[in-house]
Length: 621
Figure 1 (cartoon, one colour):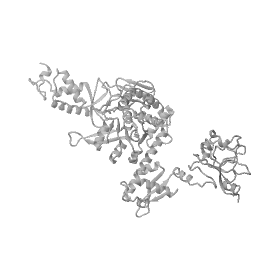
Figure 2: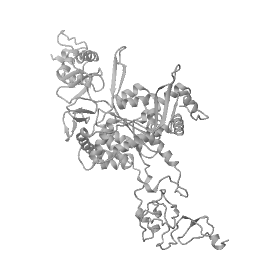
Figure 3: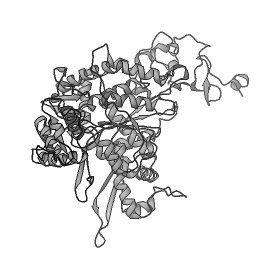
Figure 4: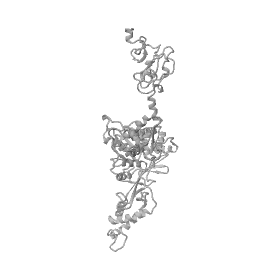
């Protein structure tokens, strides 16, 4: 009689009361073929001794329980273990796992000996190892990974032309935006640093959702690459725990709890929940994730979330250039392997350059900024500057959606260089209050102080400094808020208010032509001592004028030399005398302010030879 025939029920009692039970056989199989351990967050796992370096949860759809049931059936001529035997075996195996040293199973990417290991997600456990000197495909990962039902396999990277150029052809953004996206993708394979939330912004018809789907699919393919905003914190935690890259699609408004959760997911988060089928046991969800979102208006986002955004603007796709979704999917699938290979090439070079990269100024996401600096060193790009500008713009957009913040900015701008020092109630009393209070407008001094504290980082980004460390006199000892505009914020205002020289006419654009390197002073004749040069105002000028230094007159009629950036091409509107050697050009209209020889009043001269008003010429009296 075979062993399988001898075992007849879930308790393992045989006809002759001999032989091990089903549960005992299942435990024996597990101990012979798997290593059992607990993760640092208290979850039991098993990893095959002679198989892929993959951590299998003891329970679940693709966990150890189902594996043991299959092995038992294969080894015992098709006999299936009972549910009670499997449950008893799992209880014993959890106890064995708890006695082992804890280990950390990683999700999709992991650090290893100065390099990066990327799990391809295949059933045989293949991976890619990237180091400072290149990358290579490896049949078995040196790092323990775990999988989830949300993950799909990555293709084997293959060098097939310029993968980045092929990705560029699938996205309708500027070159600056694309390079910034490449920097973000390279950083997405570095697991131990905070990643800003990639935000695709554009009007309807710009392909935001498709772009986000492709970008997340590059690093972490999933059956659901685009997701709606979760309904509560628990559902968000489950999603984030089981995917390395996530994308929230068509975000218009983000609840406060979700905004806080996204911020924590960027820097690292942990959530505690009650364990299934228990009253007092808990499970912990720990994660740091790579996040993306699509939105039309980022101004509805909270200020602390806006500081963690990396915004990529997408342009409208003309109908004549719009492509069908199936065509885009096929093009992306065909290019995916080459895109990965090119990204891994850049990542390897970045890993080699990073030890020598030091930032003199560190923005909020300093680790990510350092990676961008390494990308710039490798590719000779300027992604770090683009990122800083993008962060400032995102914060400014958020402040546009905060009426109270806008009122505070206006109040500080009017206060002058000394700024304001006042209590929260005094601030609330002095800001311009709308007739109909917006929803976010603080209703009392406590809420005003709290909102000012929350908005302080965003206000600082636009040049408004908030200092709340001071206290008022006794006995109230009220908190005082000192609000000042930075010097860089005050400079444009002071420049705009500078009085122009008497008689000077400007082009109305607030710029000074003498600051432009395109101005050619050598082409400007100097005024003579006897004849002061009349002031000139170029009709199409983009820049204003200051009196130029004296220079040698050009024998060529300077008003017609557009190639030398004079008045004809709007770059050189400055004080000039009439050229004595120039031949009058009636086809060139010149707006020169002079004094009429007949009446002494200011006049507009249309040609160099005209010296009188038309009325004076016809009627000198």
